[in-house]
Image 1 (tube, rainbow, N blue to C red):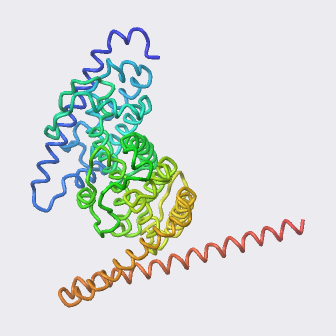
Image 2 (cartoon, rainbow, N blue to C red):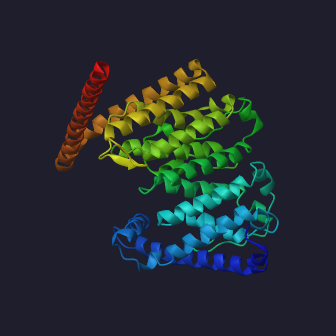
Image 3 (tube, helix red, strand yellow):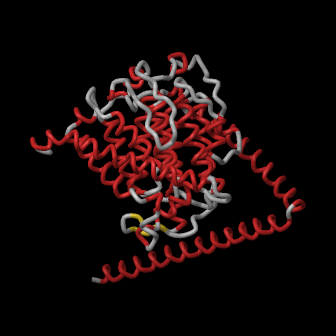
Length: 427
C-alpha cells in the first residue's frame, strides 16, 4: 500500500507524471520529425539505434532522448499506482490524458520506455473487459491532433482506450514494437498478451452473420500479394470496426511474412507472431476462422516457415542459454508445426487441406515470378544481379557450415555419453 499520507499528494503526483510524459513526447516527436526531413535519414530507425547505444558509449545528451529516463520513471511509477489504486487510475475518476500519453510512448525509441509503456497498457486492459469496447463507442470521439499533442477526451475516463479507434492505435504501437530490431523476450511476451486482449475486444464487434458462417467479410487477402511492407499491408486490409479483427490478423501475418522475405533468417518476429496466432486460433470460433480473410494470413507465414532454409546470421543467448542458428530455425519450425496442428484441430483436416493447397499454389506462383524477375535483372542490372547471387551463395555456404558444425557437435555429445556410459557400466 502507498499509505494514507500519499492520498493527499495524489493530485501533485498525477501532475508530475502528466508533465513528464508530455515533455518527453513533444521532445522526441519533434526531433524525429526533423530527422525525417533530412534526405536519406530514417528518423525512427536512427533514433532506435541511438537509444540502443546510450549504454555503450553513445551520446547521453542527444536532444531527442534527453527525457527518456524521465518518461521511464514516470511510466513505472504510474503502473505501480494503477495496480495499487486501480479506482483512481481506471474508473470514472481515472486519468484519461495519462493513459493516452502512455499509448503514444509505445513507439518511443528507447527499449526500456517501450517495455514500461507496454506493461502499463497491460495493467490497463487487465482491469477492463472486452465488452467495454461496444460501450465506449457511444462516448466522446477522440479528434486527430499533431503527433506530440494529446486530444481532449470528454467521455468516461475508463473508456478512453476502449473505443475501436483507440484499440487500433494501441495495436499499431504494439506492431511497431514487434517490428523493431530491439525486442527483448520480456517485451515480446507482453506484446503478445496485449494483442491477445485487443483481439478479444475486436471479436465482440464481428457481425453475428459472420460468426455463424453465413456472411463473408469482403476484406482483401494480404496473403494473396507479395507485399513486404506495413504500408502495403495497411492498404490491402480495409479497416472498420466490424472488420477490426481480420485487419489485426492481416497486420500480424504481414509482419511474419516480411521477416521471411527480408529478414535474412531472423526468427524473433515470427516467434511472437506464431504464439499470438496460437492464442487467436483458440479464441476465434471455427466458423469465423474458416473464412479466407482470417485463415489465409495465418496459414501463409506458417507454411512458408516450414519450407524456409535461411539461417540466422549468428547464435543468440537468452536466459544464459546460447542457441546456434540451426537450433533457432528448428525451434521456429517446431512452433509453426504445432500451430498448424492446432489449426487443423480447430477447423478440421479437410478444410485445412483445401486452404493449404491454395497457399502452396500461391507460393509456387510467386517463386516463378521471382525467377523471371531475376532473369530480367541479369540483363537490366548485371552488377546488382551479381551482388545478389554472391549473397545467396554465401548464405548457402554458411548454412552448410552450420549444418556440419551441428553434426559434429551431436557426434561429440554421442561419443561423450557412450564414454561415460561405458565407465559407469564397468563400475
